[in-house]
Structure formats: C-alpha cells, structure tokens
Image (cartoon, rainbow, N blue to C red; front, side, top):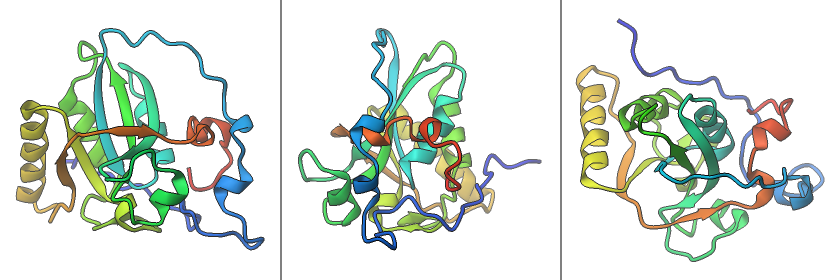
Length: 198
C-alpha cells in the first residue's frame, strides 16, 4: 500500500535569506518590478486554507497545480510582529512561518485532500525546517480556521503516526492572521522555472 507521504528531493540551494557571495540577499536581487502584474480575480464563494511547510515558493507551486484551487498566495502566519517583512521573518525572531493562503472550491476539492497534498509535499517528521531550510520560520504547520479543520488535521496526524510514518512534527495551530509576502515572492516558480530549488 502506498503512503500518502512522498517526500520531495531538495536541492542544495535553499529558499533562505542567507547572503550570496556578493553579500546581497534574495530580496536585494529581486525587485517588485519583476513580479507578475496582479490580475483581478473573483474569489467569491471560495474557501481558504493556510499551511506552512518550508519554503513558500515550493508550497505555492504545489497547491496551485491542483484542480479546484483558484489562487495561492505566499506569505507569513503564526507570529506576533505586525506587517512582517521577508528579512524579519528570516531572522527567526517574529514567530512567523513562511505560509501559503489557498483559495479553493470545496465542491471540487475538499479540505482532507488539501491535507493529503500538504503532507505529501514535505517531510513532516523534520522539526523546524524542510531540507536545507532550517529554523522555526520553515516549520511544518497547519493553521486551522474552525473545529472541523482542526479535527481533520489531528485525525490525519494520528493516522500517519499509527502507520509508523512519524513521529509527525507538524504543528496544528489556530489561524489568526495572514500577511501576504512581498510581490517578488508571488508566482516565484512561474517567474523562475530554471531555479534549481523549485
């Protein structure tokens, strides 16, 4: 029987704020002008889900390929600092995780299916990180919006642990606030298809 977990292979290139040889950060190398123009989109009637699992570039690309998912936004959630920036979150001091906001049609794809994709897109046994990206900002976390989502997340974690695929390190936390990331992070995989990390 195949497991729902299918851990991705990570490149040695990380989605981190570490400096390059020239001493510049990714933020300094990519301007907002390089981001795709925002297209108006009717999101009326869609549900939202919030997940963190390492680099948001990867999670955004994974979820936006799903039938029934209309839009995915990269950002930050789970912290205490208002209006965090990429550099602030990368410092590991704000409490935020890199996260994605998933707009989906529950008539086409349900929340348990999103959870399966979430767990299958990462190593949920890794504590505070994914592959080469390490720190609490890269932790595996499900931000639930109601008791049903919380119960579904806890049920799936219990099932994975029972199958011997744990211990699962994924946190289950109440959703409070989502801060969209800077424009140059949005649609990163589409803008940078040759980036080895994604």
